[in-house]
Image 1 (cartoon, rainbow, N blue to C red):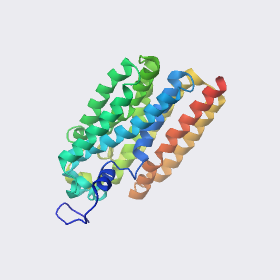
Image 2: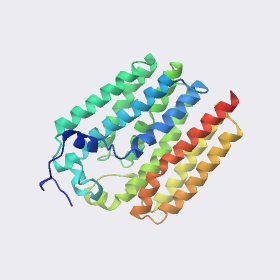
Image 3: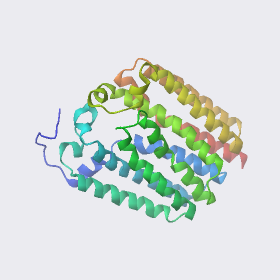
Image 4: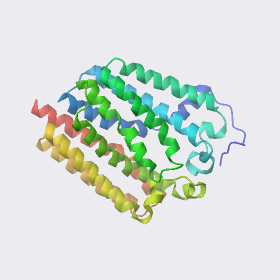
Length: 295
């Protein structure tokens, strides 16, 4: 196992920075992307235009990458003691804290530059979203359900998407944010179940620890809340048989996830987390097709 005190073979800075932003693990930005794109389509009542699609696709990748830098700086001491994170560049000392913060700042500024091409309302809502993203890594020290803070951070693309299309944030955007928060609670609790033994030793607070033996039942309830809220809001804008079919397929995926996590094995929980982006894609596809048919 690699630790910060062991010598490491030399690597290029680009290679280290790509590791820092988890370039080889697209699951992070995919989980952010599908709700944001779904919100764009719902806000526009159909295809929102290539400009906004490009802004949100690139912005999502950039902000997720910046978030990894912030998270690793905050967690660098804890990461030494977790099996899954001991080889991260900050943990091993191959990338310094100032370097990581600089990379994160450059990426965040690039994402902000993209938002500047949209609307004043979208620009305004970027700032509270960024504040929540910065707070999240530190919430693991004092809040028993830090996944809820992550849920707000990971859902802020939704009101920003509505603001970019309509220059305002209607109640539907906030309802979708709450629904998406439940989805983040699902997949990040599954993720936390992978690290539960390590997190108990080092004193980090997670939903998996807080929920204890009720973790699986709670995740299933969170999934139901997510699907229920998103179905209600989506159907009010883009109701069609295709939309209901997509939600039925999503519900079947949730049932499959139950079979993966009920044994609470590291492998099963990580697989459930890693496949969650298909759930978001399913809802996105249903929304897009439903709006296309309505047009």
